[in-house]
Length: 215
Length: 306
Image (tube, rainbow over all chains, first blue to last red; front, side, top):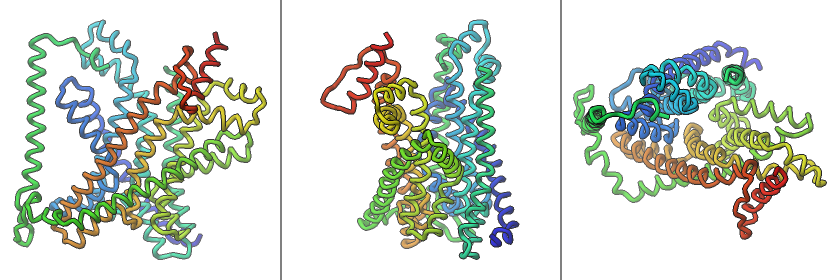
């Protein structure tokens, strides 16, 4: 236990980086995911095709490969803004199709009658989307989106294996120094992760309940 | 959905959107071509040495060596082996977890719930490191154990949702004809839940295959590791080439499995719905007892309902 208390600053440093990765790549993935989702429901066939191919390829690539590409291949191609930014890019790219799929299923989950009604009272494509479909879709989309972010929280740990000093990196460093107290150290790190994932899960459950009442 | 969002376009709009579509397609293609050419262009590094482009033959000549392909094949096989073993254990654990989660005994239900929450909220990678260091298993078994526990938890949750979604009459009928609670669970509820959740379970197994690449981090000789160790052996000149080949192999495996999952989901999707909702008699094929079983239940329910 004393290994945990001694190294508390190291854990907090790692936790800070984990949260930073989560927030930055979460925001990035949200933006990229919205673009991809918009492309997938757009009337332009070539954009739809591109977004579909992008989604299929990225979703079927293991995260380790994405981060490996960012941490080793990109610097080899003389693009090296530091491992934190590289990991952020990797996590953003990897998470974006999942965000896009959650958004798309939300838009598809809004009853067709809603769009038909909006169209028949004379709203345009943009108006229908922004005043009728999207406000409902956003509500339905929040619980699955939070699930995507829970997965992202857990995925940031992979960045720790590629030179980013976050919680998993901290765990590796401290277990190397204090081989005698591996169990306590790893349980402490797990507690930090659970702090984020379980609280996000609770938020998702609450939102889900609220949405269920509204609909 | 998308079709009702805008008017059926007239001839001018069709033309315009077609032109727009072609232009964007050309732009995307131009972007890809630019990327490929940019990667292929020779580069001058900081110390003035000129490196050949990434598509240059000197970066790809190793792939004429049979031994290289054999090593990659071994890596791919190791990946598949880990995925296979972990999938079996994950299914077994998933069944156990789901039974524990819906158990009538508080002393089983609550601890299982706590364990499940714990496992689902933890990164698989951390679990691998945990098992590797605490139980000092090899990297293979660390990977297998972490993957089975994590995916088992998720499969267990899916099965629990399947069991909960069954009509109560199924359990009541089972108990009424004198089956014990355990037998009812095993022989009445579980087969139906499993069938209903099969698409989700298979999708999770695809995730499992993807996640085997995490074992790279704990030093297991899987596909990515075999790529990097050959990069170390042949020199960093080949790092991009090996990465691209490994990526291609991964994509092929995962896309094939995803496709298979979709086919199975489509085939079982219609049948699983029939268990609880279909009132018409589905065709009974006596040759396959597994197919007959839920179908027969569905028939009885329909007859009673009418």
